[in-house]
Image (cartoon, rainbow, N blue to C red; front, side, top):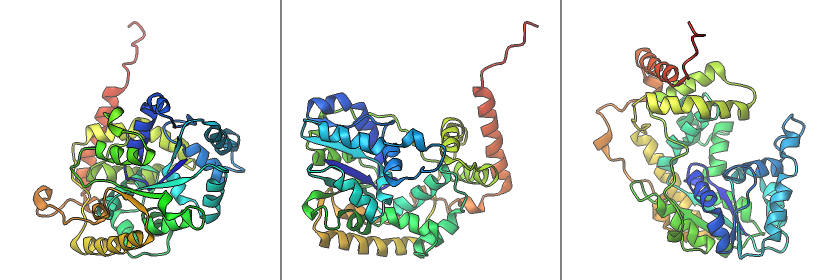
Length: 347
């Protein structure tokens, strides 16, 4: 029984796509990837954590964790994989409930990790995709300052691998059943992460389809700031409905209409702080004695290559109104062109 608990922005969506695409082939090799919800098992985690108790969506998600457990316990193959990066946000009591709910099944934990220098910009962007409106500099200052605000707590709950695994494993899961799968450095073939993950699952990763279209494309500096400002003005109270609308309509327009692909910048002092924190976290992981698939060196930030950076990197907080207006007009043009032509009523 493998519980893939995260962390977010470490290739989790890609792994879930590969698992879902190869569901039948995996089953033939004794591995169940339960079909509950869509690609991942997020709705089951919402039920586990009681996120929608007392809300209109309660009936929609009630009982999903128990159904997931029932399917896992009924499986006669050698492995069941449950995957949701939302699991990493469980507190110790919720983690204990998750692990013990599988009864006598031997539970293994899988944590996918990526170097923090890539994680910080990626997580800010993901926050923006999820209706948040905090500016990029404010986000970095809060997170790197380890402040006790919600932004910082939310980031380190997930991205401090050693703390997250201690919260999950505790006295329930021995170190030899805790697996840290490291995302390879930038530029490595995308299937490398799957091959490492498949090693933990106990199947030959090369036997499966891994050519998966990207489902969660990155935004550039300009498009990310446009979306952040949209959130400030038009954020909804119900994030599930809002996210569904934005993912279907606005995000594709931003990706396709705004050609800017500049990376979100990090200053030298910010990179220095990230390196210190990464060294401290990897040290705790090494001392814990977990099974590492890949290398803890993959989690150590590398110095930025400046070849892609202009003399003054573009920063989302410092874009001019003219730059944003020009990009917004391009998005509007794209949306108009994509809309079906209205009938002229026969005139």
